[in-house]
Amino acid sequence: MAKRIVVAITGSTGAVYGYRMLLAASKVKGLETHVIISEGATKTIKLETGMEASELEKLAFRVYDEFDFTANIASGSFITSGMVVAPCSMKTLSSIAMGFEHNLVSRAGMVTLKEKRPLILLARETPLNLIHLRNMVQVTEAGGTIMPPLPPLYFGEKDITKLVDLTVGRVLNMLGVETGLMREWGSEGNSPELD
Image (cartoon, rainbow, N blue to C red):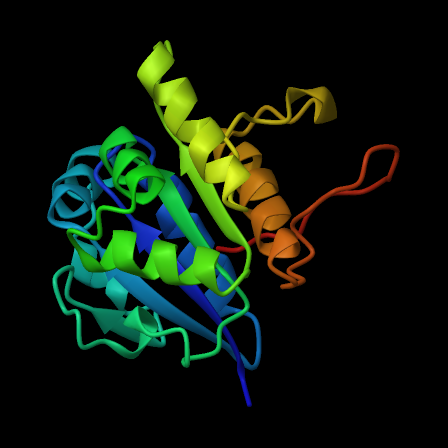
C-alpha cells in the first residue's frame, strides 16, 4: 500500500506553505497526497501566489471538495500517515479544537486525532490572543502539533522560498516522508531545489 498523507490548505495567509508542501510531496515516489483546498484558500492562493487553486490540485494524488463528507478521508478506516494543515487559519484551529466538524478539513483533522495519527497545524496569526492560545492547548492535549511556520533563520538562508522549503521539509519529515529538504543543525550543504 502506498504511503498516504492528508494536506489541507485553508484561507489564512501563507498559501505558499501549502503550495510548496504539495510540490515537495509530488516528487516523492509512492506517496499519495489527499488534498482539501478551502474556499478561503482558493482566494488566498490567487492573492498571494498569483496561481489558481487548480494549479495546486494538479500536484495532488486526489482532491476533495471542502464539504464532501462522503470522502474516504472522513473515515478512520482509511489509513493515512497523518495530516498537515498548511496554512491553518484560526477558524480551522478553533473548529478542530472544539470538535466542530463543519467541513471536511475539520472532520479529517478530528479523524486524524481520534485515530492517534500525527496532525500538524501550521497556525498563522499574530499576535495571538488568549482564545487562540487556549485552542492551541486544546489541540495539543488531544495529540496534535501546533507548528507556526517560523523560518529557521539560523541557517543564514536569504532566499524566502528556501526558508519556506526548510519548514516544509521538517513537516514532511515529521510525517515520515523524506524529501531531503530538512537540514539538520550542524550539517553542511544545501537542500535540493524543488523547481
